[in-house]
Length: 410
Image 1 (cartoon, one colour):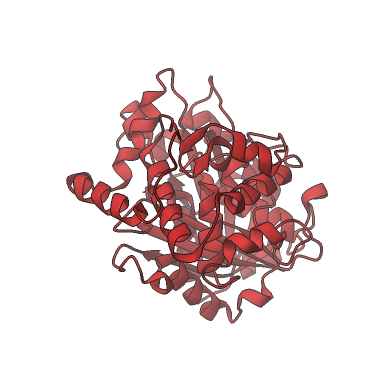
Image 2 (cartoon, one colour; image 1 turned 90 degrees about the vertical axis):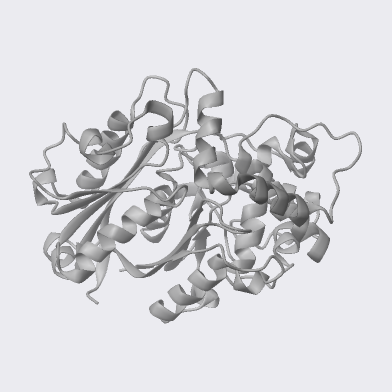
């Protein structure tokens, strides 16, 4: 397949935007990405638009991309609408990548935009109910309860109202604790590290540093997860311009980042104990094979840490640590800036924010910035190879959709 490059990226700050809309956020990110690539809307030949919850929150069930981009001068190009739960934006990148690699387009645009905040806080919480099989809800809850029964909640713990996916991650974490000895303090080390990283990211929703002790002392959301271990409700948008090698050379290769590989897979079929068959593990292995690389070649990672446990789990699934060593590795400092393999220098979803239809492209924004050497105080020294993992939804005991993308500085 033809080589493809990311030539431009754009991203709004991820935060609560009370007066913004899906359209206004998308426009900001798209304008920045086009300017970064040195092109205009008239140069774009295909658009993939990601959004996950506008239907549930606003009732906009169809043509979301066409409506969001209607005031921008995209002349008769195809706009493909993409929804894949929290993996929607990475899936939009996959669509744009396929347009370029197939030769259908020389220049394609991937956009993700999400407006999740609402005057009624119950509305965005309810939107998450659409990201697992509704008809299987009772069985899914039973599976989660059984998954976590090896680690009972300590007496006296009071949990808080939350989205259903905090319960999902809590069940995953309790299983991991029972099987591998992972501790709540190790999860707190992940959260403290990511909040420390976000201090240097002016697009992050939260920029307050936390100590491990402060993370542990915070309000419990779904044990063992405390508030600083969990991603917030966020608004925001991100975009990336994907181009062919010929277009990159014509427009200027200097700031281009090559997409070495992307694997997009569907999960939900493994047994709970078959951790080595996790869909993220399988997607990572496929991406490494396609790129001709392995974990030792990677310099920096942005992974889907909707909770601190997510980073522990994915650091193992992606092959950077043995199963069961993700927690101790975080506690040792292996995943911090300056450590063996920095994870989430942006601050990750826990502190950068998680506007779910934009999250995967937000990861790409950070990694392109890193590979350009332009990340300032959070720069990973000498970064040449970067990996993004973005997952979404629940099927069985794992994510329904997972994308692993490997990027290389041109």
